[in-house]
Length: 147
Length: 332
Image 1 (tube, rainbow over the protein chains, first blue to last red):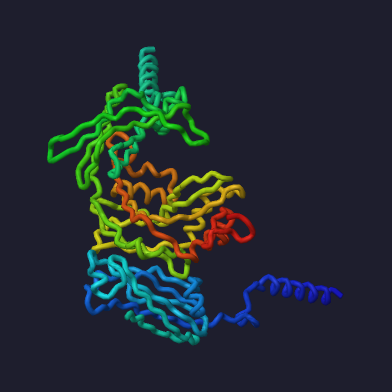
Image 2 (cartoon, each protein chain N blue to C red):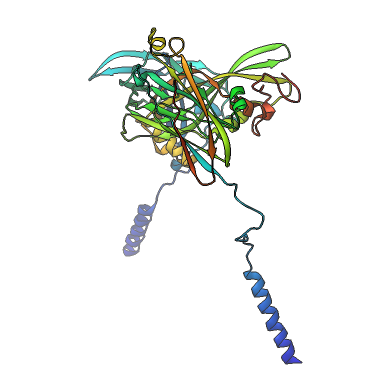
């Protein structure tokens, strides 16, 4: 009887010890949870123009939307804060088809802008848009070109 | 007998020699506390002067709370220095100011002001003569040089987009003698209360950076767009009777002198009780430095940003109108 109780005591100590070692770690392979697949859009927003000095043309907008009508209405999915110092802009999007819109403006004084092909004079702007496809884990590069 | 008298005399002499005088109630000397940040954007210069008591001298508490302030009729002088000569001198005069709400140890409050255009990259000298202690408090600083914001730019054709997918970046040229920069936006909005409209502006400084080292042609830092909405929520009052309409933002960069940078860096280190560790005031503590603001005015926000102001999780209760000039679910 005394031997049995000693065994029971030892067993209960082992169980308590095992329980205290248990950690509430997260399962390493959660079922039903998957990261949303994304691909990358790289916009190589170069400035080029045949008749005007390039430092007198500035980037003014870069937007991504789900379809052309949303571009037209200004319901963009994402927009970038474009600057004079950055040529490449990145958007991380779910796979699918999208549209982009890019715009530039001329900051020359006088009538140089209209003579150089921009509508209006200073701050006259040009827009371009296009369709692109995003694939999972792929980088899609577009180079906006302006007429 | 005479031997006993000699011993007694010697013991008495030794005991007298060991006596130390402990003056528990010795009056402590006050230390002037001076804050003067020369504002290079205006001609009005302000100075705050108070005093503290050094507890290590076993000081008794001041006999009245207002003893934390000095006499109003002090000689406080601001001098413009060229080489070794003073080329301009003005005197500060006391000006009563309204205190913020809260607990203050004194009933009155005043600052000292003077009128002087502060020029960039120029040495200024501050002199305070304390007649009661015949002490001269003294400091010099060299003002910061002009700088320019180069991004954000062209508000005529560019919009500001405040979403965490593409945070805005600030770039500005270096200012000499500067050690700290703060940057952010001034948000302009119309506030509608019943049929009354008020034009309002709130300044949101969203990032602080220290750049004491010499760098290239310009600095570039980004801001976290979420901070814009969080700070705005902290600064404005949510009231269902108030409708707001955003009209635009200005990009602001504020630069402060190296002296100010050392002080703020200590404060940001969480060393609240050690802020007096840095001082450029002789015979006192505090800071004498300069500051300069640059801004690019007249940016509009993107439609997504305006909608986030209206319905975003941080600012939805501030009742901003959305891109269509309405509020879904009422208002507008």
